[in-house]
Image (tube, rainbow, N blue to C red; front, side, top):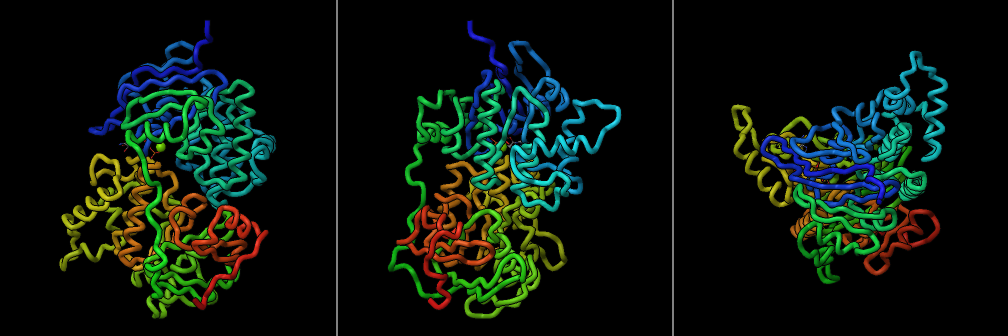
Length: 509
Ligand SMILES: Nc1ncnc2c1ncn2[C@@H]1O[C@H](COP(=O)(O)OP(=O)(O)OP(=O)(O)O)[C@@H](O)[C@H]1O
Ligand SMILES: [Mg+2]
């Protein structure tokens, strides 16, 4: 007889008011397997994981651990059953240290009457060292998001769980950090630990996982052994249709206009980026590649007043724009989509409609200073439809949306200002394949209509597939520019890591 699965989910249903997040879903996890859970944004993946981890209670259905029915009434109950969850959203205490954040989970289990701080710090460092060289005495607020994501993972590793759930753990990690995580996952698996792995990245799933389960619209679709399916099969089952063309057509050589929209001339902040110059031409999508931490985000922040500049100038349609604070940039027509959705992308407590119109309040404010709710609603409806936001309604708070759908609202919020230039930092992070295609189409449409688009991305296929021209940043400087003919993964990596030479960015062109 086969051993009982570690975890069995039968007929689980979960509603949030009128929204049916899960309908009668099944799922089984075998001992020592890495099991991928796939589905579009809003398919119900995180909801099921929150149920397994005791964060949410199902309306119906059964959970069995080792064949025995259990009720997982709280996160502490999940922990005592040996279930650990790394949440999709980073939820650390920013003012506490890394070690303190890591203990917070572990103290539930230790039940030590007096905490020996030094010993805990030592233990925390030992766990952290398996992942990355981050000093656990540092304050979380001082760490970049990739490190914060690693702290979330390290926190779960302190729990000694039998079932470890990772909900999009690599979304904010560098390639090296992700590889380190994969080797830990393989170790855990070898020790009989069972892992549920959620990701929108097929390559990761196919190199790491044993089986894959697909959800669509809150329903169970199928479970297969990875060896028996292809990435295309999985994607087709996720979206319920064939995805034909992954990227929209690029600009033809004859469509490339000489007209410059944005000109960045020798900007620097004296610390994180230096002497950055480039031009953004009408109609094109300009990509910015480079390693995480290379200064790409800082450059974007420097352009739009979110970070003080010590040198250089920004011109829009040939006119110098003295941008000192972000509102100057918005007034000039330059907006920035932050890579950190939770920190500065959206207001979680506010409704979808309020979020979409927040940057451009004056358009919706009548003379009496009152918000024009109807205009706000119409605009929000329009963008929500174009970006296919999966939601109960535009009055719902953004925090009730799935991670990927929150990201779509963050994009809509920027587009609603009708910008002349939009700088997007990791615009499709956490967005499923189908919605990604839609967003790429929309960006191409916007570029054709004359809006300048700059895309910072760590995803190589996105840079190469979407952009007409690439700048590669290394150590705060533009290491080189790649035109349509020179663009390749290898060329980007060479420039990003300082191995190669390509022509310098053409400020003169
Ligand atoms: N607290 C909540 N209140 C209302 N609706 C919610 C809540 N949490 C989730 N939902 C809804 O449940 C559905 C499933 O969301 P869930 O977060 O599970 O999706 P997901 O598969 O994890 O998507 P993603 O890939 O974007 O992370 C969505 O339609 C979402 O809007
Ligand atoms: Mg999710």
